[in-house]
Length: 388
Image 1: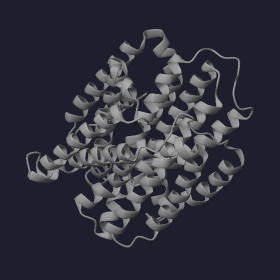
Image 2: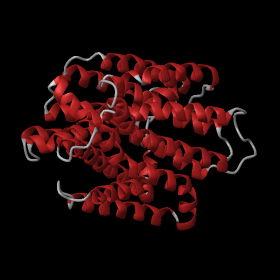
Image 3: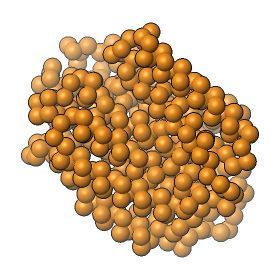
Image 4: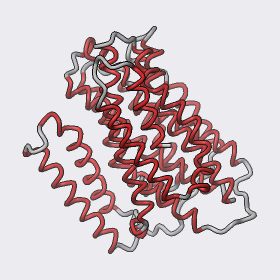
């Protein structure tokens, strides 16, 4: 997220230009969007398979949580590092390496025979995503030079990012109607292989000319801070928020975060531009998205299980019930996001998104096992509005 924010901040300072960029930039965008959808689908494709994993692998509640979230924890912890690797050694190389790692780990996950194996493969899958996702945005910004075109391309990128995350459960539900849970991984293999070939042929390479050396300590501190923080948030309800493991996790996260900011302020080649933190609007947007994502992940995890085990939904019905409102809102709002920000300003847009997060949380808190579906669907729609 930090690298994405850095790129967006730089865009605002760039003058208008008549250099439109790479001649095949729109084809490059199509390939990048295919990569993005394939990678982001992995965030949530297993959500609707959780009851199946309990039956077939004997997964416990804690193991279910980590089967879903190990991917997210590693992705979040290594995204800054993955972006720095691309800037230093080449974004095309990072993109293709990430896709190759994803092919290997998806193959491994498809033959996992017990929950721990699946958790490990999902975590390693996050390494591939951490290399791939920031590279897609950096390449996009590099090939689109004209400001208006670049903004439009980033809007499409954001839309594909959102759609990929939320068609994951629907894809999983469709596959589970006819195949085993392993199909949730196998289905991506041919797409990934085709995507690698397309990247080799069509994606131009680039790197950050101002990156003198790789910020190894910055990568270490950021990874520890983000990973321990997310681990503590996930495990807090199970261990108790005041238990020693959780308090220790938050303490380590805070200390590692402080060391990260101190180091980035003193090193000659920082992986994160601290000047971005001086923008209250940018900081507010980042915090809003962070809390909205945490709330969304928890809500989808609980809702897909509850709808199947309590209300008797099939995996596909549960997927449509949770992801349908999100996909619909994203299709409507994301393409119009640049106009909305230009019309109402960044501050009002962020404030509205924050308010929608709060409304969504209140709506979902009031939902019980006997509540009508529209209450849950409305909550997901409000949450999607804050993301969009």
